[in-house]
Length: 247
Ligand code: ADE
Image (cartoon, rainbow, N blue to C red):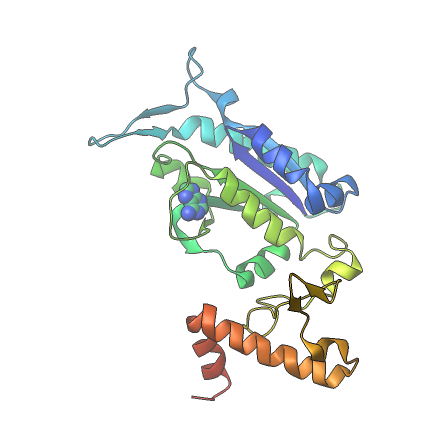
């Protein structure tokens, strides 16, 4: 998987991505990140890439041309990295994901879908957004990471890249991927977990987990998943029950 990120803060994206699990995996060449600095494609001598909004309104918008040229640079770089034997370049339509609160909400299912791609381009907006015409011309998907507004799309692109990366074979080591995690459990949240010591601040690890009886442990964990989900995310719990015809 190759991620191309169009941004005015390449250092922010690079430093977060090169840290931790994604950093290790990119060091091993399993996933790759490349950034294109939109600011380098300013069309004026001041180096600005934003302008006032037609029709009035607060704030500035990112202009079409710098965004478009950054996109073309990313497309060119992706094409240069592909093996010659691959399909003709013009047959390949790399998805371009615009990170915006005005987008489809990102979910684990979407992460699975995106993990099936070989390349992804992320467009990170700033100021009050981006001129609609360039979005219309290059963007294939608009994604939001939740119902709140960030100062820019970099953090949200990092969230999506992280969630997608960990689904790519080899990114997580065996012990990490073996975890039974939330949203990989038929829609229930993960059960609480414990490690040594078996008593801390007077709090004991549930007896059953020390019993060595695997069937009982599995049963207990399933019970805990349902309890936690019902309490913390009743919406997910209802969906889970409905999907199983329990209501
Ligand atoms: N940019 C600003 N806010 C955002 C959000 N909630 N999701 C994705 N990108 C954003």
